[in-house]
Amino acid sequence: MRVARGFGVLAAMALTLTVAACGGEPDAGPSSRSTPSPSTSPSISGSPSASGEPVTLTFGVYGDKSLVKAYRRIAEAYTDTDPDLTLKIRSWPDEESMVTDLASGGKAPDVFLAPGASLSDLIDAGINQPVDSYLDARSVDLGDGYSRTAIEDFSRDKHLQCMPYLVSPLVVYVNTDLVDFAAMRQQGLPAPDPENPKADSWSIEQFAAALQYASRPKQGIRGVYVEPTVGGIAPWLIGAGGSLLDDAAAPTRTAFGDSKDALSQILDVLDTGRYRLRASGPSQALAAFERGELATIVGDRSLVPALRKAKGLNWDVMALPGGGGTTGDYTGLCLGAHPSDADAAADFLTYLISDDAVGRLSQSGSVVPVNQKVAYDDAFLQPGRAPSHAQLFTDALKGMRPLPSVRILDQLERAVGPEVRKLLTASGRNQLDELSATIDADSQPVFGGPSPSSTPTP
Image (cartoon, rainbow, N blue to C red; front, side):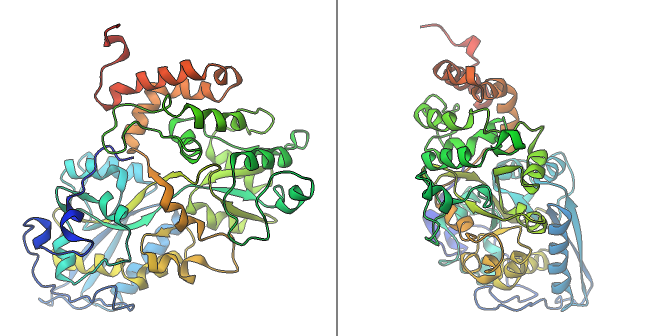
């Protein structure tokens, strides 16, 4: 669900980067650092600069302290092979603060992470430069290692603007002590088969039964937390088979009215007061899950390291209930518009997308690689460690729908947030038709349409 997307790069490239196919991007020339293709070299391969002069690059990342530490270790491993190269890590706590900083005039790092949803904002601000010619000069063949969707998400104006790197589909984290599928089936309740190692999806009926089974209000145990925002309700809506926006490529409004059937089904479950946790925000809800007071919570892979440390907590992951859809976003690796050394920066980016570097980062447990070879490797799946259904993070990509940028979501929240929150109440559930129509109408100005008050009455 990108506000603006470009597809030209794939129409000409068929997933293999070539300068000619990208419509005349100036040739970056041969690499002065000669980093081998990530598809053929699993080893670290920094090499001295052609001039022999010291080179200093900045690497811009975002995330919690443990993830930033993982990026730092990868950078240090790369520079260990090149005494003339210095890599400085520049970090932000989250993607929103990074995008805000760079888009408001902050100097772009030489190589940096960028959320796919905000790519258009970064391009408009002149923050990055296309990477296709640099990767072609280094013989990087995407082949079958990257999905077509991932490449499309980072393509604009017939160029690959950034290299797809990570992806963050939302899944349902489940306390497996509170939600016991075997016990539920023995009681005649609808539940997935726990004997099936691939049973990582459930119907809305099975999800409702799980919440009923797990919720124990008198003991302070609830079944589910739903963040009462546009972004918070989106994965549930899409999982149930609905859509957040009327058009993924060029939205003009939200699509709550078009998704009333899906919305009705999931709200029948989510607006049940005795099942739902009332929390001040996602952090409080996560704390309740870690204490064993919440049966299910929606989140991405970044929750894994903390949950592994929670004492006495047994958990796994499941798909959003319904038809297998979810929300999420891609993260790309970009080159700054004016790097201190373009070839050195391109060499480092080429190493970062190598199987070796992506595997090292995956060992942190907190990210999902776009590199499909690594995504199905033990470096990511980490057999023997929770979650048992780790492959779900990769399988979920088939039904993942990216959300709009943080900027657009903020505008939607201001425009329709009160009505969305009302949907998650008993009275709102009884006004589904009216509220859906109001939300769709009030969302139009966010996408450049007329405000409801300015729309002529038929």
